[in-house]
Structure formats: structure tokens, C-alpha cells
Length: 96
Image (cartoon, rainbow, N blue to C red; front, side, top):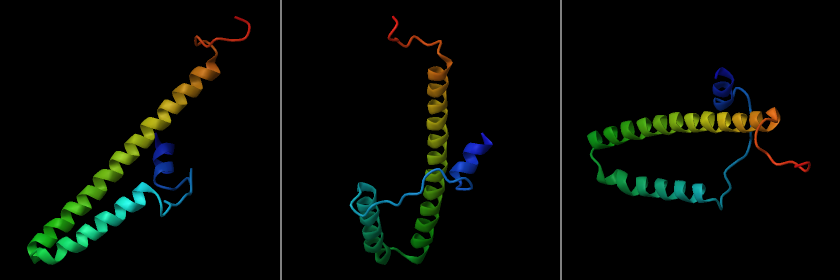
């Protein structure tokens, strides 16, 4: 799956689009930033260090999960395309 990983890591561009400011994802990101800003003054230096490590690990985990979901979705699309192009599936035709 080398090409899918290259695509995922933007070495091959599949889609260039920005998250719109009215999107749910943009709003959620704003909430997270605001809550972090509220939380930081309450934490000790040690707690801030631990929190930053947790945040970095979560970002890495999200990236790995998104890459895996992307690859699985791409494979499903390829299987669907293969079945449609193969012509041996039970797809009704006008002649039936």
C-alpha cells in the first residue's frame, strides 16, 4: 500500500480543501482551544508537561487512525470499482 501512504502523507495530493469556519470541526477545535486556555493556569508545571505529552500522543494516535481509515476506505472503493468493472456481479441490466 505504498501509494496510499504517499497519498496520505501529502506526497501525492488527492484533495486540497480547507475546513470552513462554519463547519462543525472548526467550531469543535475552537471549543478545545478555549478549554485548554482555561485549564492551563490551573495546572502545575509538572501537570502541564504531562498534559502536553498526552496531547502529542493523542495527535499521533489520531493521525494513525485517520491514515488507517483512509486506506480502508480507499480499498473499499477499489473493491466496488473492481466489481462494477468486472461485470460478473449480479447487477441488473436493461436486457434482463
